[in-house]
Amino acid sequence: MAKIANQTAYPLVQPAVGDYFVITDVNDSNNTKTVSIGSLQGFMGSQPPAEITLTDVQLQDLVGNPVSLNVDNPSNDLIIPVSCSAYYTPSGLPFNFAPTDVIRIQPSTYLGTTVSYFEFNASLLNSVTPSIISPVNTWEATSQAFPLAVAGTDLSISASQISAVGGGKLKISVQYRLMSTT
Image 1: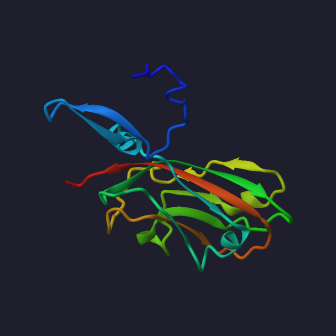
Image 2 (image 1 turned 135 degrees about the vertical axis):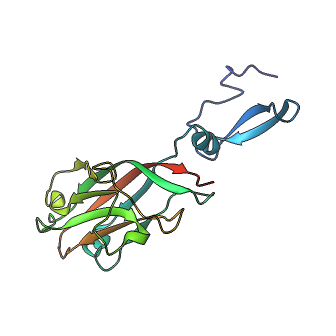
Image 3 (image 1 turned 60 degrees about the horizontal axis):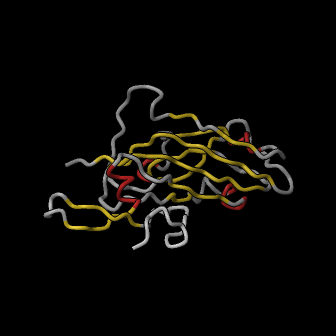
């Protein structure tokens, strides 16, 4: 058997969430088993970020058609937000969002309310310059109760009062932890 350092026998790759590690299971007579990188992330308290890229059509229609941001949550635990960032890539004409338009990242059970985990002013997209956007973390802004109707609910991206034209795409990335209620 080749040594692990032998990259001819064992090529160096970028790991993916579905890739496997070989482990020794001390709870099963030290038998050799495999675990996924994704399961180690959860075991160590972090999850891969939930990400989505919104098109200009989706951005223009967020009031009537919120977009679901799928969260990898097989145990149906509570989703605890950690951080959020967005990357805006303009194309064609810049958007013309009003200064009062807000884009929200929130549990789908909060749709139609102003309660959100993260939000930012949509007029930040009224630009022809690519930019990184740092949404306000409303989850950590003050001590407050978030009535979670359903555990494991995916996040939704919605908006208030948006009726703009323009072009571009917005990639949103949300880092989160999962919290078991049992």
